[in-house]
Amino acid sequence: MSLKVRIYLDKRLDLDLDLILEKEDAHYLKNVMRLKEGHNVYLFNSKDGEFKGEIISSDKKNTKIKLISKIENINKPGKISLIFSLIKSSKIDYLIQKCTEVGVKSFIPIISEKSVIKNLNIKRIEKIIKESCEQSNQLFLPAIHEVEKFEQKLKSLDKNSMVFFADINSSNKKIDENIKTDKNCEFYLLIGPEGDFSLKERDLLNSMSNCFPISLGQNILRSETAAVAGLTILNFQIH
Image (cartoon, rainbow, N blue to C red; front, side, top):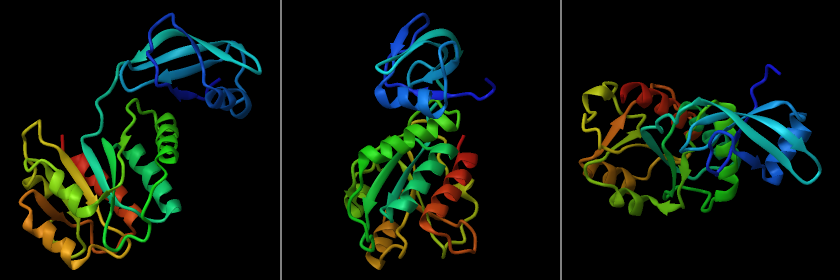
């Protein structure tokens, strides 16, 4: 088959291993992708790289795969973590999917003063991340953190980290001039809610020496669009 079918497994991967797939993954291969015995499937995790496998048995109970060759070593995770205010679930789905595809280190959901949504189904988000990695040829699954409050999260970050926050009022387009060259520096992109940051939150951001406003252009972007655009820009700037 010309189509490359990939599955993420939270298991050790090594040559000549025979692996039994979980029910959900087995259903996907058999009933969605219509793969049978003898077909190839590619397996990866966030530690051992990507392997080519062959389906050696498939029935109603189990799908067994034998790893036959190593395709690629583990690549480096994304360098930027996304701190994002909770938005409507359908828009969060898009944000998670596209930011995973673009390349992100981790997702950090927060509750801002203007956040309408106050909770997040972490298990559901983990599933979206997994599927997005499988489809976008990535080897590293970004983590999804538990929801925290805006101020609490910002104040918990290392003072040597760098937080770039999207600001329609900012004229700062020379992002590379602010970036630290310290390889141990943690980078974050902060995206506000649909109603933007409150005055109190802006005062906090402006008072913190490790927070930098950046411009994503003159157009007013939706939160999920700003997240994708901001990550794309920062991934290009931070090497």
